[in-house]
Structures are given as C-alpha cells and as structure tokens.
Image (cartoon, rainbow, N blue to C red; front, side, top):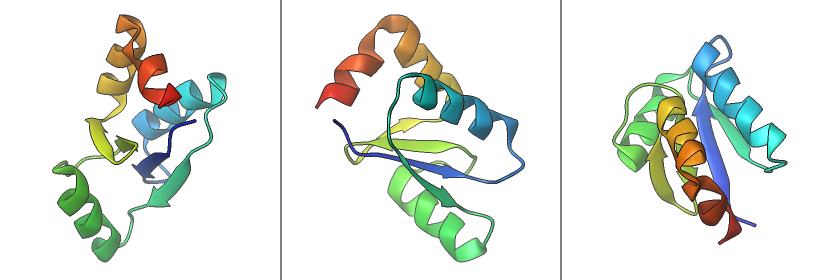
Length: 83
C-alpha cells in the first residue's frame, strides 16, 4: 500500500472531505496539522501549495481535495494507492 500524507487544519471542510474519501477506501494516512507557521512552511516547501489540504502519495504531491476527487473519478487514484 502507498504512503499517504495529508496536511490539514482541524477546521477545514475540504480536509475533512479528503480524509473521508481516503477512509472510505480504507487507506491509512499520516495527518499533519499545519496550524503552526513552521509546519505550514514545511508543507509549502514539500508540495508547492499553500492551502489545505495538501496530499502526498508516495512522496508525490497530488494537490488538494479537488485533485484527490478528480483522481478518484478518473480511476487513477486506485493505481496511485497500489504502489
């Protein structure tokens, strides 16, 4: 199974929606809260994105919630998660 990291904040509805999709697919993920500036700076450096969620699958930045759901609709998410 793939290594999945999701950068979030506790109050973000898009973070909740992305985590829900991963949960329904029974994907284990590491959640990193970026409420503190140092954590957010690390997220930006790794992903290039400044908004949450930011999702990495096998160290590849795939974007946020919309991009995760687009991967699911296109059938590409399962392939990424199998690596």
